[in-house]
Length: 86
Ligand SMILES: [Zn+2]
Ligand SMILES: [Zn+2]
Image (cartoon, rainbow, N blue to C red; front, side):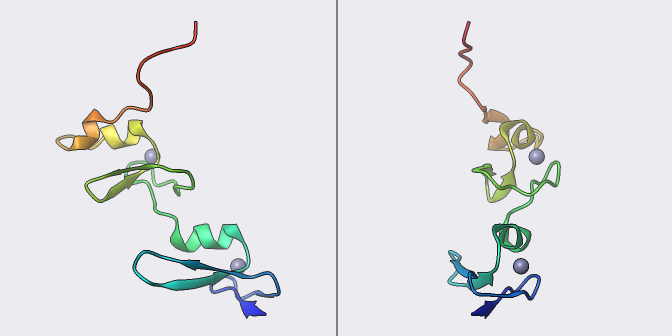
């Protein structure tokens, strides 16, 4: 048994998430894990739950948001290679 560090629920199916920096966090749900750990898009402020885009240490939810940062490599980011199904 362990207690979720976000909502303090004492739950038998809590799980741990280890971060790159060596931190260990305990959660009772993926929602609580995302609340605590998911990066936030610098352009639209949504929580990034998928792969997202990282440009020069900044996080964005998609290529459109990455391109919003003028003067960075983000302006080169594309979600697709341009091919469309006909
Ligand atoms: Zn929780
Ligand atoms: Zn965004």
